[in-house]
Image 1 (cartoon, rainbow, N blue to C red):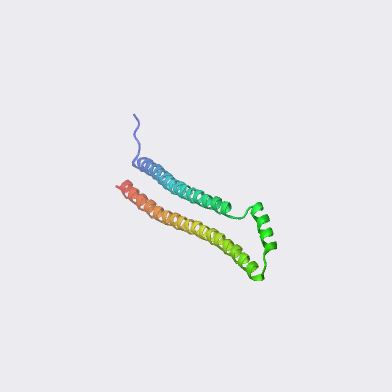
Image 2 (image 1 turned 90 degrees about the vertical axis):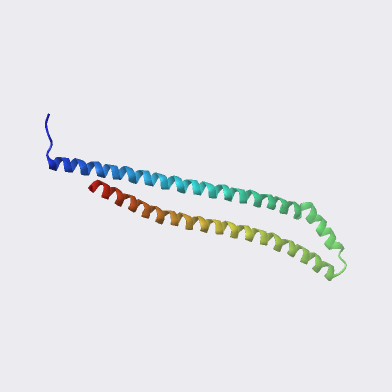
Length: 147
């Protein structure tokens, strides 16, 4: 049986430690990636639910809004209006409805925008936290391998 020198043993130990660190690093990256994927999926589900709710509201709004037949009736009513005051009242009613629909759309847009900014902040915090965790673990492994 052939023996190995102390120098060769040191090289083998170093190579083993480096491979172990690489494996630990890969495990950390995989765990971080899985965590970020699950958070992103959770966000997508939450966003899809909000979209579904918004779509239901939109369907209700569309049902409440004037259809082509309703518009034809409005034209007939407008033709029968006796005074400009009556015309102004109809105009105000239409503008009020338009404003209401725009407010709903704007609030939905702002909710989505806020969710996206929260997700970005969360992803940034994971990246910073994961790097610190990674450095701490690698330092711990380095200390163990030196012993």
